[in-house]
Structure formats: structure tokens, C-alpha cells
Amino acid sequence: MNKKILGRREKIALPELGIGLVWAKVDTGAYSSSLHAENIREEKLGKKNVLLFEGLLPGHKGYTGETIIFRKYQKKTIKNSSGDGELRYLIQTTIKIAGEEFLTEFTLSERSRMRNAILLGRKALKNRFLIDVDEVNLAKTYRKESKHINH
Image 1 (cartoon, rainbow, N blue to C red):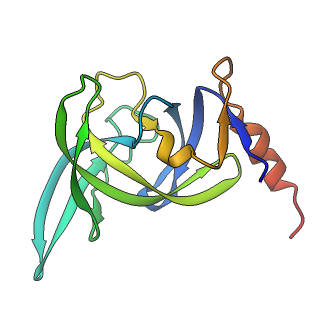
Image 2: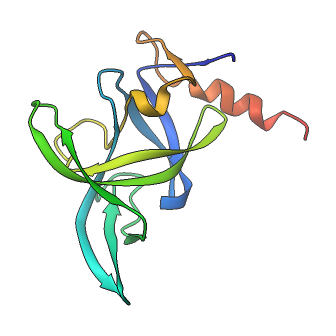
């Protein structure tokens, strides 16, 4: 399998969350991927609990302000950047990057002090991509190529 090359920052889309092309930090030091979310809460909908949140920060170009609802989610202890265990919600959603589209996991976390609202970890990148830390936005090449393929 030929692996596509990504840079240290890439534009991705999360279509199921209503998020178009936004910047994400590619972090091979992190195992899981993370998405900034606000107003994270569980509520009862009928007989089942659902997870509600708003993705990205107000003021971010991809911010919609819409509440996102997930019926399938889990809670997981993740080591944060300080190495401490932190209980986070984990969701699965579709990601579009470099002309590829696949299901991957994201933890929801407070990333307002971070430069990037989205972090892509090894689990999402594994067996798909190689990372060139000298570059950024290499995925645009593959997005352009995929538009020209005749189906």
C-alpha cells in the first residue's frame, strides 16, 4: 500500500460534525486524536443517554455554534499533555484528509489554549500516512488529484 505524505499541519474536514476544511495539528507523539469541544454534557433522550457538545471555538472559522448529538460514545481515561490521566468522552466520526475518507476516533477536550483546535494522533494516521515534519498542507495535493479522477 502506498502511503500518502502529510505535513505537521493539515486541513481536514469532519463532515458528520458539519466542519469543513479546518487546520489540524499532526502529532505522532499522541496516540489518540482530539477535538476541541465546549458545553459537553450527557442528557436523557427518551430512555437513552446522549452526548451533546459544540465543536471548535467561537471565532474559529469552522465554528457553527450548532449542538452536535451523539448516541454512540464512550468515556475513556486518556493521558493529557502533562501525563496525567483525564476522563474524556470518545466519539467516532468520519474524517476527510488527503482525498481519503474514513472513520476514526476523537476524544473531546478543552483545547482553547492550544494553537490548533484539532489534533491528529497516531491511531488515525497509522497504516495510511507518512509525516514530513518540515512541511505543512501537503494534503492539498491529494485533494486536487482526487477531484480529477474519472469514476
